[in-house]
Length: 525
Image (cartoon, one colour):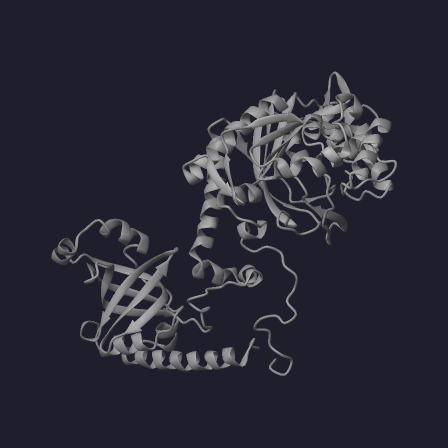
């Protein structure tokens, strides 16, 4: 049942303390349940509110007023001095000292105080004052036991340091490492800022299905499930795109959704199988309009969350108000390695033969370039870009004009039929968002879906599936539309200087532990 003999002994010791606390409660007329796990405690203020209200006051002012408060929190430190003691409560990441004297709280309450352990929850009633050292504190007049920590907190000098253990036991990580809590406070602020931005511009927030009969809207491997009553396979959403564009067909000209997506793919510092995205669509707009919106929304969110457009990430200072725009071909040319010879010209991206010559030159230069013989030239160009340029895109950069071969839902450029009106934006060396002028020709869309089916037959299990109903929706008329998706997890990483996507997801997916915590053995069961 326990991870160690120490844990087992600790549990038993704290059970004994609970029994003693119950006995003290019985002396006050409380039942065992009321004494050990009471239902509630009435507070007059949070610890943060107490600090905000009384921190500006001097010791003399507090002594004259003796303002009474009722607070609650988790015990994070405790020390005794005979018939008196100090302790620190923590609530919502804020700590405040309490002072407990036996002659103030009484014998029974002081006996309770001596039975407390780090991690316990207690309620305190008393008045605010300053100690001789000037620390804002609460002079306790009453202590109420609220909950016992049956397991010991991590060592106070080292905290919870094991990275994987922090992810598995986020419930401990949050109160032991208050900077971790701040990351998730900022994540919530990111979502509020997004809603503020779009609501002020007339967008409607919507919700679309998370279980879908066709896995569409992105090139990704889906999770598969089954609906028993309808006896049909379903896919967890890889993107909400096709449903959101159906809404634009229906006359909802400006829509957005903050959505959870699921992709049955690898896990890394930048990828989690379950992640959060914003997607928004605007009728009568194209990818140039969305570039402008992108260059407005990212600085807006940064200012709302951090109060500045400057952010530190992985040793780089990034200014989220300053943007660069490059086409994909321009980016390849700019970061072409000297070892591969002269930089290519725009004409070198024209057909499969010239693109294959670029592949040979890069392989001669020992660039680690994935390539499958016979793949579309556009797919190879996209791979060259990812290999050469992506790592250099630290400052905010929009990369526009993508190959048709990797963009089955984007509108073709009028003067270049093998290229589409699509862009991705990069910050910190990775993609944060993806946008394009939406394809609204139903015949063209059907042909592209059919081409994607051909890619699936060639072994690409991330190629797009056929969605006949979406093609039918386009047949009713989708106006010229721009659509964009922004990764909330990655954006939060940038704004909080978090090295891994797991640091900004409360409960990231992890491999099962060899020995589950607190699982009873068959004999104990």
